[in-house]
Image (cartoon, rainbow, N blue to C red):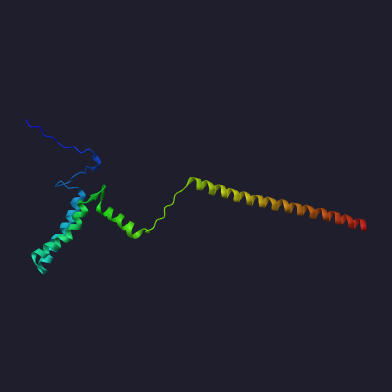
Length: 153
């Protein structure tokens, strides 16, 4: 009796469920769209030119859909990779300055802000105390002044 072995992949995250013809649902959809666009284009191009030119045109039309169905890099399909490429090269700015959130700088900014607040509070306290002194001095001079006027009369 011959023993039959089945290979089991070590990384089960790479295993995809096959729907039909040993193809995934994504691959079936991409191949179906390619067939829906490629076959009619073959017959249209065959009327205009030769059969070999029509076959080449059909392949040019169908190949992007085959690539979308089959190509994967690091578990990401082709359209995701193209999206990253377009964003990195055309949408986002070319120069991206590197900036860190340094904890020491944050502490220094906080300390500086607290010193500024303390200086403002101190200045306000001094202004209040000076106003009180002025008001107090103004009140005593009026009292002494009235008393002086009473003495003179």
